Amino acid sequence: MIHYVTGFMFSEDKKHVALISKLQPSWQKGKLNGIGGKIETGETPQQAMAREFAEEAGIKTQPEEWKLFTVLTRPDAYQVNFLYTHDDSVYSAKSIEKEIVDIYEAHLLPDNVIYNLRWLIPMALDEHLRFDSPIEIMEMREHS
Image 1 (cartoon, rainbow, N blue to C red):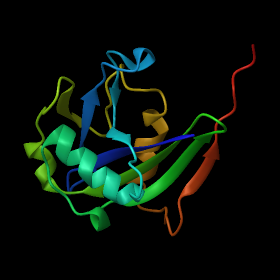
Image 2 (image 1 turned 90 degrees about the vertical axis):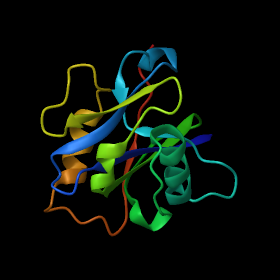
Image 3 (image 1 turned 60 degrees about the vertical axis):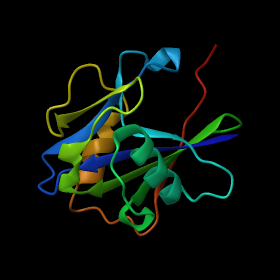
Image 4 (image 1 turned 180 degrees about the vertical axis):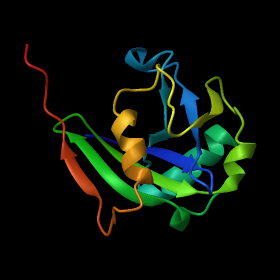
């Protein structure tokens, strides 16, 4: 199983979020997603998120700044750890690699976002939710 992180850096006022325009994998091409990548051996999700955010958006953060709120697992395939943080340095996010990083309105997401961001982002922003431990979601395989 491959382990990934996907992170959402929101502005302090929670109005804006950094997203990345994906080139790969093919099913994500041209779509917006949170910033992230694979968790390397020995890394916690928070360490991987801080590393990936620096690599892809040029913003250095500390692992403890990232809050793990959801873990989505497709058995025998992958596990994605979703994290968020609030920091106005989001406005200095820039594209480091080929994929374009930009700032979007968190409550008015563009049409081309990955489908699950439509519920993950509002969940991360919901002030009435406490994430003492992450919500675990099991993704089911599609029927053939």
